[in-house]
Length: 127
Image 1 (cartoon, rainbow, N blue to C red):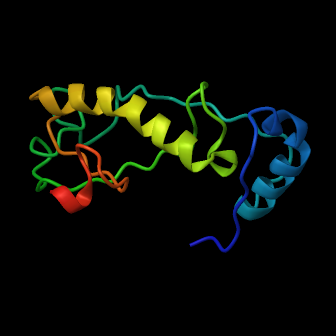
Image 2: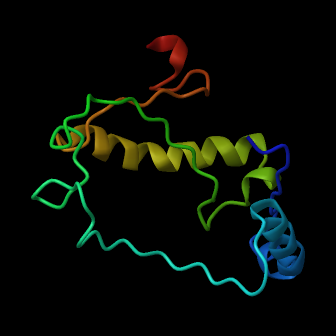
């Protein structure tokens, strides 16, 4: 695992410190020259996918897995994580709980939500 990390404290930091971020990322990944990242979410022609073309674990013959989602970016209404106050974090969680509840209620997603914030509906100490 990497022994280094970089955090932008403000959205403009990605532009203001682009040269630093680019050089550091290239050095870590041993990349030379100009680089442009392009996402390609097209799965057509990928060998081994089920006939449906979806990455469904059951169709791939794999067992269910547990997943933890870590969000490294922020919502536009809030500062980036490194610059957030305790109150910012609590307000952001309050805003996100509505989205989590919709996902949990949808049979296609389900799951549970556990909060580290004390005295909330989903506090770990209450579950």
